[in-house]
Image (cartoon, rainbow, N blue to C red; front, side, top):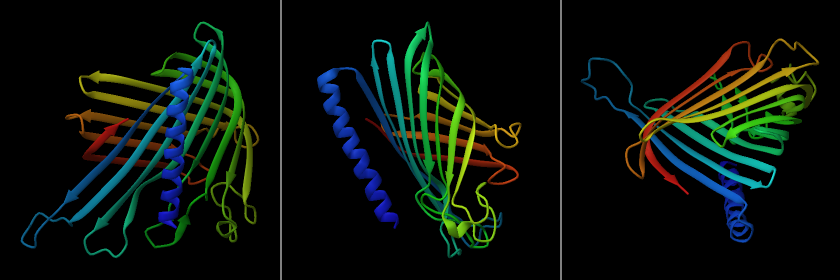
Length: 282
C-alpha cells in the first residue's frame, strides 16, 4: 500500500512538472518552483553511557512545489505539499511516524483594486499511511480522514511572500472510512456516517521572510469557523518552516505545526521536527 501511494504521488508530480514546463515555454505566464528535502536525526549511546538515553534514528522527506499563473488582472496560485517521516527507537518493534501529509492548495483571484482581488479557493488535505496510538490501535489511514474546503472570498495580496484570503462562505467536507465510526464519532463524523458537511468562514494567511542571509522563515495560518455548530470554536492550523542554508545542497530545517480542532481531539496538537539534511530546489 505504501509503495502504491508513493508511486501514484510521484507519477502525478512528474506529469505536473512536465506539463508545467511546456506551459512555461509557450505562454510565459506561469512560474514554478519546488524544493525537495531529506532530513536525518540520530542519537546513539553505548552500554557504558551513564547519562541515560535510548539510541534512535529518524528520517523525514518533504516536497513543496508551487505552480502559479499571472496574466493581466488574473492570478492563480497553486501549492502541492507532500511530507513523510519515520522514527525507529532501538528495542522497539514498531517504527513510528513523525510526519505524514498530502495537501493541495489552489487560490484564484481577479483584481478588484490595488492589492485586493475577488477570489475563490480550494484546499484538500489527507495522509498517505496508517496511524496508530501508543497502544497500537488504528487511528487513521490514507484518505481517512480527508478534508475538502471550497469557497469564494476576497484576497489581499501584497506580493508572492505576503497574502491573506478571507472566504466568509466556505463549504467543508470531512470524509472517514466507515470502520472508524462503527462504535462512535471520529474526526467530527457522527457514528454510522462516513462524511460530515460544514458551512462557515475561512481565513488563510501566508508570510515568508528572510530574517538574515541564508535563513528564511515561512508561515502559513488557516482559520475556520463552522456557522452550523459552535461557531466560536475556531479551527486553527499554523505551520512554520525555518530553512538555514549551509551551502547549495545542505540545510538545517526546523518545522513546527500546531493544530486545534475540537472535532478531532479536545486539545492542541503540536508537531516539531529539527534536522540536518539534503536540500534541492528546482
